[in-house]
Amino acid sequence: SNFRFVTLWFLYTSCFFFKFLVVNIVGQLGNSGLADSGGRFGPRDQLETLGDMGRPVVLPEFLKAESKLTFHVNEFNLVVSNLIGLRRNLDDFRHPSCRQPIPLDKLIPFKTSVIIVFHNEAWSALLRTVHSVLDRTPVQLLHEIILVDDASTQSHLGDQLKTYVNSLNKPVRIERMSNRSGLIRARLHGAKISTGKTLTFLDAHCEVTIGWLETLLRHISENQERSDRTWGTFDWQFNFHWENVVDREIERINDEHNVPLRTPTMAGGLFTITREYFYKIGAYDEDMEIWGGENIELSFRVWQCGGELLIDPCSRVGHVFRKSSPYTWPGGVSHILHKNFVRTALVWLDQYSRFYFMLNPSALSVNYGDISKRKKLRQQLNCKSFRWYLEKIYPESSIPIDVIRLGEVRHKSGQCLDSLGHKIGETVGVTHCHGQGGNQVFAITESGIIRVYAGCIDGGDSRSIGTGILTLKKCKKDSNSQKFEFIENILLVNLLCNSE
Image 1: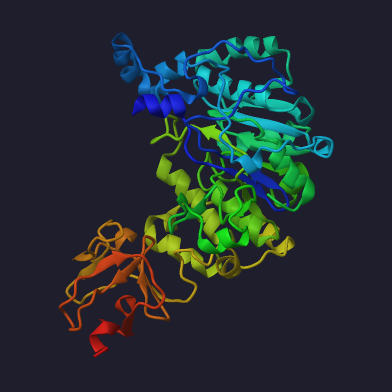
Image 2: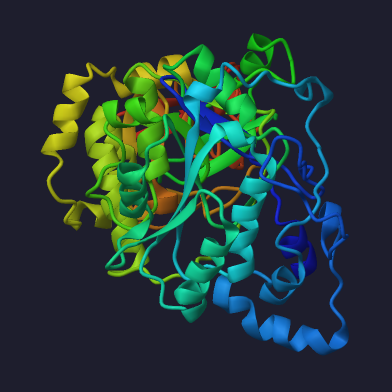
């Protein structure tokens, strides 16, 4: 599986953009994006290399030990990555309806600055990202590539990288952060020194494919208030998830494969936005640390403040998704994430911020800094409420609008209802009340639904009190087996028990 992970690198991502101008990019590669020299920075080397067209690289026995030994350095197969060519041919896997040429004349005013932040990135992954942009971006649309070094300590990213970049004789430059600043502040620095009309943020381990930028800039040129069948969502702890697009959105776009999707949130690693709008809506929250949560915060902000966040299915970019981060987190991962998430919750979620704090009681003691400027920004932009966001943008959210109780379902014996970390279809149980939130936090709605992020509590088909088995199932509006009568300080009774 390591071979497939690194040689293909591509998980489904599709392409974003905000209504006052954002365009996130993503793509499913396993065979991805053609290397085209016409009108690009080519010409491409036509010699076939390992990994061409997304074909797997099978390591010989004598390299397998080194592969395992070095995996932890970047949390992907570094040996395979180094064997794959820095400039490889990739297939064009866009839907046929996306392949019509896009006239460039109206896009030239929106030339982009590509900003790539890296910290101790693998040489091959970083340069493959750079070369893919140079090889598959029309010259007329690429203003510059800015590589922002977030205080890397690996020697190959110093003078060796500088010499290599200078030898390209292309609009690529390196900016060095004097201290480790994290993705958020490093991106802000890159945006500040860039001069393109639009800003395109890419992670340092990507490969863009043919037509990736043209479609983004086309949508931006048509509607400067903007930012394949999956879209971005979030849970009660602000974790980002890719999920299947809901039916109402498929119906809105008439099931077309080349029409942008209105997504509730974006992954954040890859997107395009106009410079003017980026700063108008407050850029990134510069008091957030390293990375984590900035994508969710920006998504809420764009929607609540009059923008629009879209996924462009015609823009495909391969991205390395790692199971864990190979980088250091000054102060610890949980502290940094809690700080970023708390800032997001207190500024944008209104009364619904309690969902996050109920699940994460320890976040209440985190020093999240001063949020007065961000609250003032929200006021100045005349942004809508989070309830509006739940009603109009993401009514399918796991956060119920009509919640009347949130917390533990506690018995006088000291036992609490507990989802046990189970998934849909599995049973729910009772365990000792621990007061730490997590699996023991439930929301009760006006309609009698008891839900957690993953789904709703279902009493089954039992007609007698005390005889049913509670399971976690997908929420259904008209299911009596998922409706309970809440009697204050006494009990919860499944409505099916009284239905006969």
